[in-house]
Structure formats: structure tokens, C-alpha cells
Length: 463
Image (cartoon, rainbow, N blue to C red; front, side, top):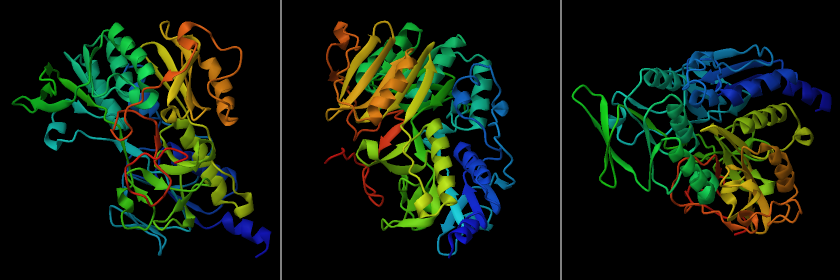
């Protein structure tokens, strides 16, 4: 087929996007921008059109914005059929059909899966249904929790001190609410940034009046006769009286609907190549199914071709744009998704940003500023190269360290402008917890090499 006819064919037909959130919307916009003239169907399990999630744990909980006012801005009209409030329930790859929970089926020529993640619920279902027990992921979650905080509860208990849990605790203290945080690790943020940075985060919590309990687990939530939560029992025998509980135990990737479909999908996401094409369970890449956003597992050449699962706003946008481009391109015109992970959080008045994959780091070196002043840059090293960086109120260094990561620069850093204060004079262990033990809040998950490997194990690059 002549090249012009092939390009014309690519810009026609039926494309279905399953997942009507950030990645799905940006992919749809990119498809139209690049000349797709066919039919476009957007499938979403929530009844709302795409909205922004980061404000839910920040501005919404502080009363600075309403959850219903978090709609994502549109870059252009996408002229799509919206199937909202009805989740996908199955995939027929041979028949090229997406099955919906209401019994309907949507045919496709090309499919983009951007189903993202959901909040991990409290493991005891009956306790999780007590009035006053929340998770925070959806617009409805944010609206409900904001209303409860506005009512002025006596004490809020946050279970898990990852980024989301820490941001919620910060919002509670800014509202003047009493808050207890229970974290099974030794400090907040250790799953994402390691123990050295976690110690700084712990000081921030306590200095702002958070009752931080580390090295403990919540074993039971107790309700009163009216079905309202009234207390939590901890593994050290303590009992915390509370009337609001926010469960922040991390995320689950929305892949269950793909069971038996033949795709390489599982608890860690959907495996795809660097061009966002999904793998089948046999390890053979598909030609008509693409993946983008939090649900995707893709190899990254900068990080030993590890399959990475990234829960990042910027990654969702970049990967969606790459997937859309490749859906409309022939093999020679496709491009890889090699976005360098980046993340930010605001808590207790401090702006925290990271770049790269800190969780791969075995060592950390404070290269600018001071841990004690909480204004610093720290660089992570792995096998003699810079693998990631984190800043507290010092984001101007991130672009520099991103370039160092992209250039596979050596670790420890050799440049002469390293801050030579005592704490920055040498690398120290980064103190990440044992990777076989789940922790709250890592935003980058290293999930091995094989798209069909279903073992939940960590495989270091090079082994």
C-alpha cells in the first residue's frame, strides 16, 4: 500500500479510549490535533468528564476550591461520544470489542487503555464502610472528605504517610484540626524518598503539631452503635479516638477487567513497549492496542530498561501524547516515550520536588543547602551514576539534575559547585526499606523485565 494511502487509513476508522481522565483526554486531544477524522469514543467509570486530581488533596481539602470545579481545561474540541458512568468489564481482542458493565459492547479499530489506578481500600470491608472512613482518589472522595473536615471533627486519623497521607495531614493542621498519622515505616515518605529524607519529613510533621506514630500498624477500626467510626486500635496496643479516618494505603491499578483478555496485564499494570503498544501474555507486542498513564508499565532506557509504572501527572500527559502520535503513525514515524519521571508535593509550607527514579538509589548526597534548614537538593546514586534527585524549597536545581540523569553522569557528583557543608561532603545510604515489603506512597514502581512475569519481586537493573 502506498505511504499516502496508509497515512490516510491511520487517520480514519474507530478509536476507543478506555479511561476518561487526564491521560485519556490528552490522548484524544492529540489524536484530533494530528488529523484523526474517524469516530472517537471515550469510556469512563465515573459520571464526570475529566477533572484534575492533585487539587483534591490540596486546595479542595483547604476549602480553597470545590471538588466540582476541578475540571481539566480543554485544549481543543475532540468531537467524541462519551460513555460515562459505565466501566469497561472485558476485552475481546479477536473481535476488537470493549465490553461494558451494562452489557453493551463498543467496537474498535484501535484501542487506548488509560484506566489509571484507584485508592486501595481498608482491608476489612465492614470497618471501611463505617461513617467517617474515607479514601481519597475521586472527585466524590474529595468532596465528601472536604465536607467532613469543614464540619470540624475532634480528631482525624490518617493511615499511611506517603505523599497523599502527608498532604492530608498538612491540610488538617492548616485548618487547625487535631490529626494523628499512623505509618508502619520508620518515617513518612520513606517508600518514595528513603529514610534520610523521611527523617526530615518526620520533623516537619511533628513541628507542625501532627501526632506522628511510626513503626505501627492500625489493626482495627471501631465503630459506635450508630455505625460511625470512633476509634482505631494500633499494633502497639494504643487506641486513638477519632471521628474521621483517611485510608492512604497506596493505589491499585485498574486491570481486573482485562483478566482472560490475553493482554500482559496484572496488579502492576499493563506491559507495553517504549512506543506504548501493549504486550500480550506471550510477550508479543500488539499492533492496535496502546496504553498510557498510571496503568502502564513501560521499559525506560535510562533506567536499565526496567519496566516502570509511574503515578505522575506529567508522565500521564507525555505518555498519552506519545501513544496518540504512534496510533496515527507507521513504524518509521513512531517515537519512544522516554519522559524522565518528575513529581511534586506541597506540605507544611514546603515545596517538595523530585526527578528521576529515587527508589533505585542506594546512596544519597546532599549537594546544595542543608537538611536542617529544610532547603536543599539531594542526589541519589546507583551503581556509580546519578539516578534521581529531590529538592525541598530548592527546585531551581531540578533541571540541572535532570540533565545529569539524562547524561548518565557519575555519582558522587564531580562538579565543583557541590555544597561542602559537613552533611554534603560524602554520600550516605539512602535507607529505602526492603523492596519486598510494601510501603505507602512510592510514585515510581520498578516492576522487573518480563511483561508476562506475575511475581511481585524487585529485579535490580544489571542482574
